[in-house]
Length: 79
Image (cartoon, one colour):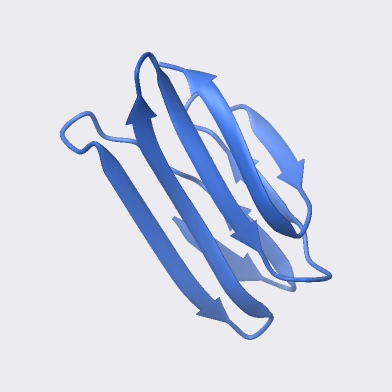
């Protein structure tokens, strides 16, 4: 899911093997936030779009966390 609290963005994607792709868009007061994932061969490709002057904490299904800046970010994770 996508959560925005106190000018902080937190994204917790939850890939599901019953789907091959999912995308969420949230129109926050700070701008458009996008989160998507897709299965690609033996990996999961995550794509995020964060509005200008913002950063987001990404919490992956295994509990690992990463902070990303504004703009588009792609991350490949072994499946």
